[in-house]
Image 1 (cartoon, one colour):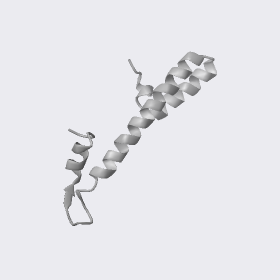
Image 2: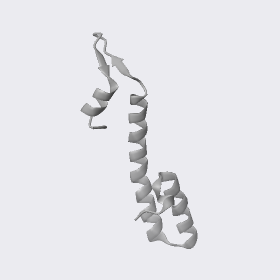
Image 3: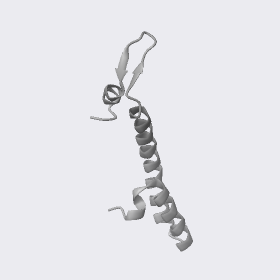
Image 4: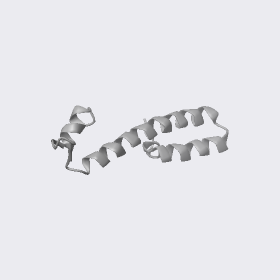
Length: 78
């Protein structure tokens, strides 16, 4: 189970640095891998948030596409 500091990539990197100072390389490696996964997830969440900040897009042909429909089609939201 993740501790409070492991909920974000930033928190994981801070804990990884503390593990380095303790000489615990196994914990450092685990935390760095968790941070790598969280960075990807945080990046995707940020991208979805940016798209959903706009109500709709209009194609060059003049077709209006709601962003919620786009996100659902991409599998980003349900």
